[in-house]
Image 1 (cartoon, rainbow, N blue to C red):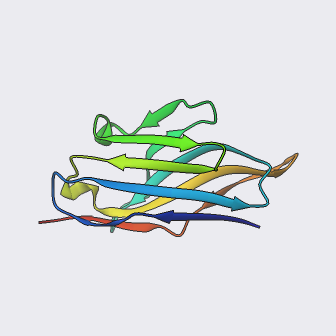
Image 2: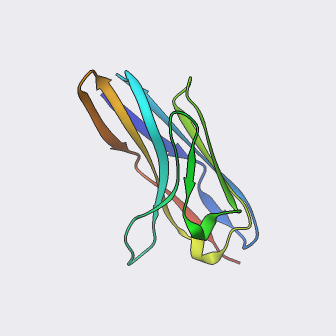
Image 3: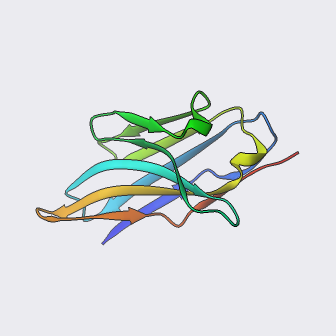
Length: 120
């Protein structure tokens, strides 16, 4: 069994900052890319930021320069530092990990989501 658990969401004023954390645990052989996605009401889930096992990063245009993704591969954790938050960043944020359980068996695992609300 593999678990992916997020933490750190909440309510913040426009211009504020939040830090999201995600940890993968369980019967893990290897974690490949990890990323953060978000889904706002009435919209499709979208990629926010991703980071490979080698540390290469990718960001949505809407968050470039404001969000930073990082990971601790030894602990199977990924962090999303969010700054200069805008009301349009309001969404449920989901952590995703591409995880190998054993050779030849890998899948995408998702967390339960954490709510981020940006409002005055």
